[in-house]
Length: 362
Ligand code: SF4
Image (cartoon, rainbow, N blue to C red; front, side, top):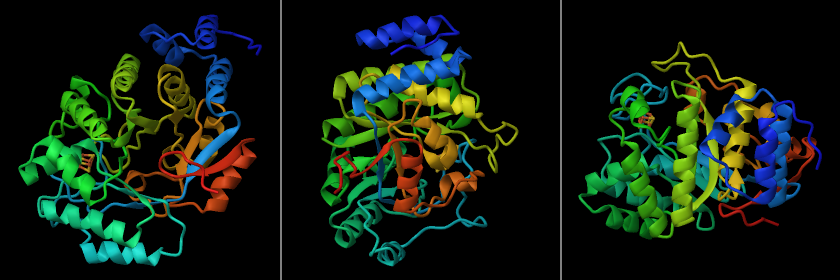
């Protein structure tokens, strides 16, 4: 493959990729700094095609956000409300059942369930939630809770981390979506989400979850106050943990949306930065199988382009996205299977509907 390099530093990165050598922190910084976007896309695309050829994955999924009441009130979060505040809500188990039954004819294979830390809910609520979802959708995978919720639930239940995970697993938890770390960095933690668990606890919980045989994704929220170096350190920390546990399934770069947050002065991320984050993930995370372009956050059009910058997965139909849209996302609330396939086909890739574990669905 011939690439015409404007930024010669990318040539040595490409040579490393061709040899299968691991990229360094300096390489990661170069990926973010370079203006040679086309060459960067070609390198990331080469790495992506070596793993997945022309395939691009998506899933038929449904999001359920059981409550937006959260005691943490992170500065970047537009979604959370205080108890009793206008717009605050919590779904009862009956309401969750009703929502599931409303879409029961849709061929959903994954339920993505996350919510705020609502002090009115008991540990039993979460067990009932999982068991209800499993009863109504026995063939779908339950992908639920961030490490922040797991930490909270362990305290709520008065159980060890391991016992909490086991109880949730017994009730139906099969996978975790991987959010809540934002950026694995103490400075950012202190400034943006001081009440939430810090990066050491996040890594400890992920390790315990992987040890219990539950796969997770990993994410990075970018485009707020983080530096390029902090982004690269985040990717390297995930890569290191993946070497230890091999428990991560996909990595998802999450573009920050500032509307209705305490950081509303921060402008949206640019298309160039969004694509660099996808490429950086594909090239730095050499031990991750999948990189997602999350269309909710970067929009359907750029998600299509991201398939040529290292992404191999566009996430899914979602049906009703609430969190990012509260922060001003302009993307659709949900997509149909036909729309997912059309996006992928028109980007020049072969759509593959998958289950939560990347097994193709015929
Ligand atoms: S980001 Fe999560 S933990 Fe933070 S306030 Fe929002 S819902 Fe709560």
